[in-house]
Length: 411
Image (cartoon, rainbow, N blue to C red; front, side, top):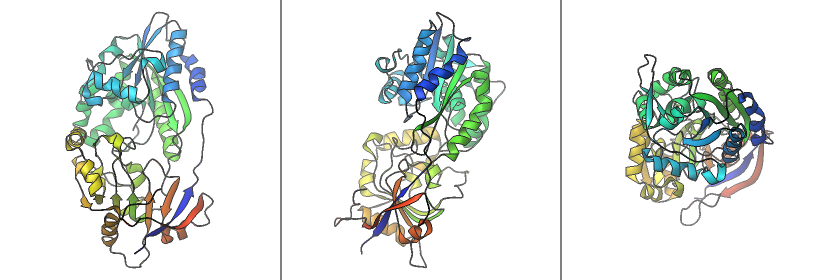
């Protein structure tokens, strides 16, 4: 039996900033008083997939040099990169951040200095080279987190506490699970800021098309109050699925290059963390995932968020890498392997049968991945819901989803 869905295009509000490096250059002037000639200034960098990351880091380094100071880069990524100095430098290089591209040396170490924890139930650490510098500027994108929601999620505060805390800092807070992240990033990061080693943070916000829409240089004493406002902006400008109720969500691929947990829970509504409730919308009865990106190198963290996968995906899972990531996070549900079907079509059929539909009008959405939501495929029931909406354009009606071998047709 043929499976036909209609291709639609979602139009999200676009707020692209014309010149992000220029905005950084303009705002960095507020730090003139803090950067003295001859000072050594660390620049903390560490998150994946940030738009304009290299030119923004390069502009920051150029500003420091122009003040007569010496900039250098430190990886601020907790335990990523295999928790080794070499691995973390390689991760930065994979983002395009090298001495050649940003005109500042990369100085990676896993050595840390213990900071005063202010009687908090965690130990607090800081990268030794950042601590021994005359000041540190952290650069990060501010956005909703994939594991929890709170006043501070992914951003400058988290980078200050966990990113610069290296493996010691990451393990210290992760051992308390989601509650630790949600409740202690704020007070923990304030302790780091109180140590006086961080001069400023550069907060970046992206729009629904993952383009830089806001840049804010914040002095250390501004970060805690201003970051939640930037987080609200990021949340309002996220891409989303067009409806709240879905019977089958068909996902072509997942991967670490798409989301830290393979598929962004902020898109699917599924968080997969014990004790944390899934989002109220969207609700997905059955989720199918067909492939794992090559860039994941076998790390299939997040596969447990799916109900059905393909044997093709299952064969790509490198369990050592996946388990290491899952165990470090403490969220074991995300590493459980679902039912694996022989083909894309069989996986879809298993999911559809499991929905127990009563009206014969399944609500199906097919997406390439959770990072690309502009063009998607929808069933007739969903098309009826969104037809005539100004943000929706019908691109191709009744397109066949599977070829003769049961493989998904090209997106």
